[in-house]
Amino acid sequence: MRPLLSLIIAVFVAQASFGEDAVLSQPETNLVDAYIAATRAGDAEKIEALIHPQNLACMNAENKDYYDTLLGKLARLPVPAHYQLKAEVVDPAAMQQRLTFFWGPDSTLPVMPKKEITIQYSEKDNSPRTGCKKFNFVADRDVMHSLDIVESNGKVSMVVGCIGPKTLESFRQKPKLEADAAARAKSLLGAMTPELRARLAKQLKAGQMISAIKEYEMESKQNVTDAVKVMDELCEEL
Image 1 (cartoon, one colour):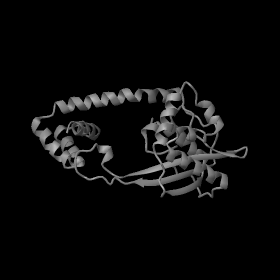
Image 2 (cartoon, helix red, strand yellow):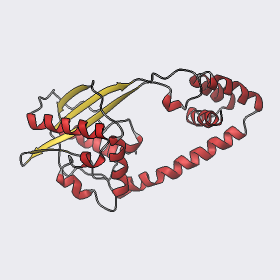
Image 3 (cartoon, one colour):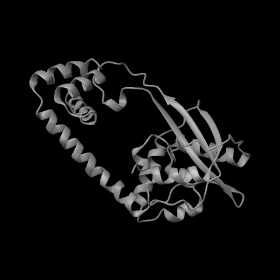
Image 4 (cartoon, one colour):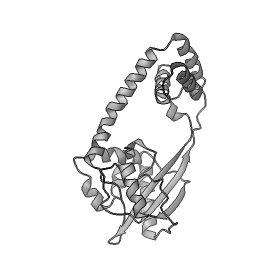
């Protein structure tokens, strides 16, 4: 199961091919403008205010930590001045499959969206390619905000998944899993020979993170996920 928070940097993530292109009405355009403004203001409450009332009804005290984390992440992804915008008509069958994949097998959709609006842009890493950086900060990245929308009673709103108890439990276990992975990386780093550590440190200081990961993976026989985490740990020490 891949909950949304592990994902792609996308709003209410979309990779399905839903159908023909759609034209946005003025109310729909207004919602997009309000969403973009909320991200630029870093205002999670304004993003939440754009969500459909039936969705808000399933965002309660029981799962508040999940949705607060989600909305907080979105509020830290300001849409820049230049971006690409696309709108498509939603296919209900594709949407149902996407719901299960991204929001969890026990999640539901209280309202079926009619259109999907995608806002996409690239974030350039213009910092010098020298010195040690963690893996996730080495390269450019593409960012996608995908808004599933519906109009009801004359108002356009965003639709999100209502998560179930299994998805919520998986989300709450994530910090422990991350802590266990960090502890494993520290242990592997501690077991590294001084000679290998010196070679890898030299590469990391030169900004050659990918090369260091590959060498450690080959020398240690660890998988690439562990190799990345160990190099990140070594990077912290330099």
